[in-house]
Image 1 (spheres, rainbow, N blue to C red):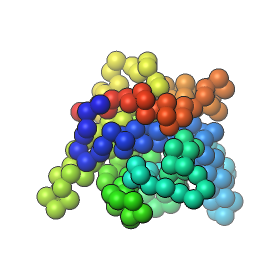
Image 2: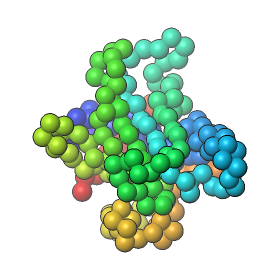
Image 3: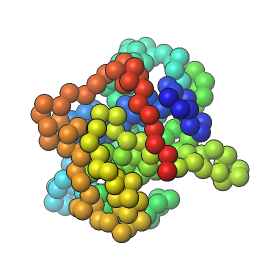
Image 4: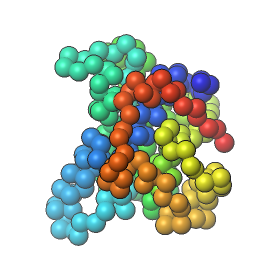
Amino acid sequence: MQILGTFSKFEQCVLNMALIHICNSDSYVGQQMRGQYNAWKRETNETVHNPWLDLHQFTIYLPHPDQEYEDITLEEGLSKGYNLEVKPVKDPSKLVYNIPEGGHFVVVLKQSRVNGDFAIAATGIFVRSLGIISLDVIIDPDEEEYQSLVIKHPIIRDYPQDWETQLKGFLTGKIVGEELPRVVGYVDRSLNRDYRSPSWNDVYLAASDFTIF
């Protein structure tokens, strides 16, 4: 696997695992999303729709590979998606991106040492229909140097040939979300009851590649 920017092989696999969980509505983070969304709508007396139609922020924590926890191993936590958080974005004007409908804001926080604090490593947009995260990885914050990185779902094998064109068109507002192919349906258990999420060990052994554009 190619090591990109400030991400090690371990961290790239954590990002892959995070994308797997984010795409699956039945995952731990998917259930969190639904619960928070329903509570928010009850507070505002708004009609409850599909939460994916409202803008959310997903926070991905990249732990140090030697980090230990009291009640669960690191591998178990990553397999369950406990390193992910989600919350509805109630004021999109505060975001650094203008995110089209069908996209969601992503923040990546990285832990550089055991028991250390997490620092921001990247921001980006999750495009649910395509099962893709487009990131701006921080290389040098003082020089405002970033690296563009696209994370494709490691299980989806039948991406459309023009997925890069469609992704760019969506991010620039030339293509609306409803026009994108819904390849995410293969890896969302709420849509495909035969789907089974892999474990952390499965993902790490596969070590799927990243794509830069």
